[in-house]
Length: 209
Image (cartoon, rainbow, N blue to C red; front, side, top):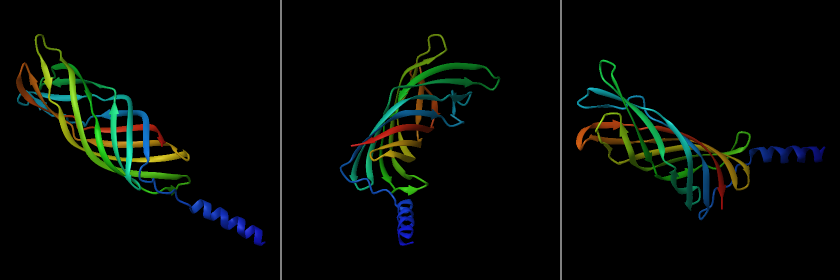
């Protein structure tokens, strides 16, 4: 009877155990993919004559994080260029198409909570930082027209969940909000602001060192 009680107590203790804090000095690398989902209302240009609609895109991503204190890390997100088609639509339904590419490196300070048994020791985290987005290879379907989109700097928020499957390895699901607004010009003349400000959804494999 005593042995049975000890076994039951040990099993209960194991199910209640939470993961230890990630110690200061740890590095982690995450490799995966993210989908950039622009907000539904992307603004208007040419004095409000044309509404803008920007579509989404998915690309491979990688991030590195260094823990400056227990559970507190500084993360840099990088990706290969995202490609976006966009459409300008006037009140009569006439449409002008175009496309652009962008790179959105994002630097965040993040806090990782200790693990919760659900039933695994999952580790949620939150972060806040700054996003820098640079646009290039802009094109618009107007003969002789040269479109330019200015670079953007804005705040970024980050939430996610690490699901460990080994001592230093985990599967990550996360979501980011990025404040991305760009001033557009056509043949050097300002035509208005395009507000992309997407939610960015991703999955990744995470390895700690």
